[in-house]
Length: 563
Image (cartoon, rainbow, N blue to C red; front, side):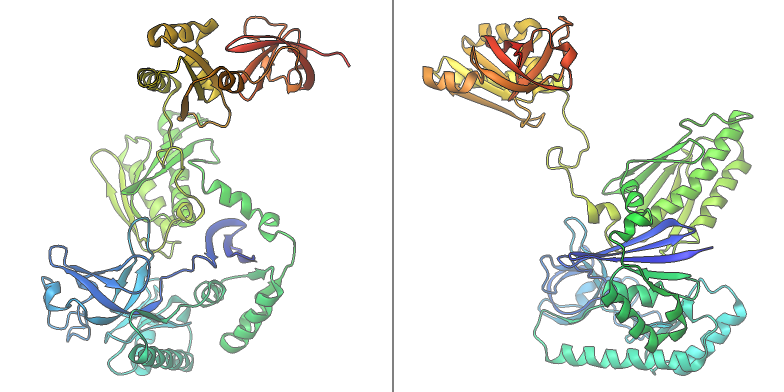
């Protein structure tokens, strides 16, 4: 498998794409205005202890206080290596923390939405081959190292290099390395820990005492391993910095580092298009089926559909092939979109148990490629697959998008029929509250047309019921759910605000569409006000000069001007 890392360094953001056989599988984005927080270590102060939630809020100097669960606050170095130090699983948070207490914490989960960051007192310092855990006496081996013999060898080496009273986790990249490389790694990490303790002892509270590496440096530490074929950067400055770092840490990998200063490297590699697709609600499968991915606050729901795929033999075979392809794509999309939390997958119903097991097995195999911990819990009685994926940072959608300011994240707007009814009620209320005899109503052209009605029937009905003279004007500047209702008190104000054109006026207008009933005429709009242009159906899509001949309350007549 060809594995590439492409780095795009911009003025306001740095982006890193991981490609496997030219397919985008992971994207990392770091912006200067919103630096990543996971891994940073703070000296904080306990603000509130919440016995009912067995947790505490810790002021670490950010906009929102950090959240510390009891299991993340339990003192470490217990005799059994669990980190519980004699406390039982039912330990009370009030026995561990007090309001005003100063503690050293590390962010393990980014602030997401209205929630502050989640922190722990169990610090971890990742290196190239090892992760140092200075508060826990423990040895762990990456679950991705499958050979029992290699696991035992690394466990033996780790026990020899590990500082007394501290713990280490051996990373996947350490497979096959010798003791000296592990010893150098642990030496750098213990020096870093001593610096952190020194800063914590002398600094103010709250205060950051350690920041994790910048994005490119983290990629070198965590992603750029021997199995990567190429690391490509579009910044000469970052390229030279990477070469210097590789000189120190792993000179062999320098041969895989390349500079490509093209204008838009992500465009050239097709990454921009893949990022756009990763934000889509619908994902098409090669077979013609598709996924629908709905990310909600509580969970992510994924629906599988056959779409255009009709199969070749029978329904059961069609369903199986669609579900198998969907299983692979779901694993890819979870990884690419950085979706975390609860995931519910509604595969197409399968009648055969063997087929259900086949699809689950395919999903499990693809999930193994994902470094983020994912658990497949099985199929429910309703035939839904339940999964959980660890969420430590915002998803791709949360990084690149924000809730729509019009629909407030609902993804839907009110229908024209609903809005027409609502706006009529608002017009009735406005009419009752004003002494003015004329009212101007401005709304989106689609809603305005409904309020006017065919041939002005709805407008006449409104005027009869309100006893007012109404001018309803379409405005493209109005969102479909907004309306402006304004009483007009004198004739000058009425003339200035109700009719945007006057007889004899010559205008340059774009003919938008043919008239619905007078097929030879064309329709144009001036600030939402309709112009019925005689004989202009042939000019649809063109901009032409016209002269206004007659002006009515809801539209005007015009004719093309010969030049």
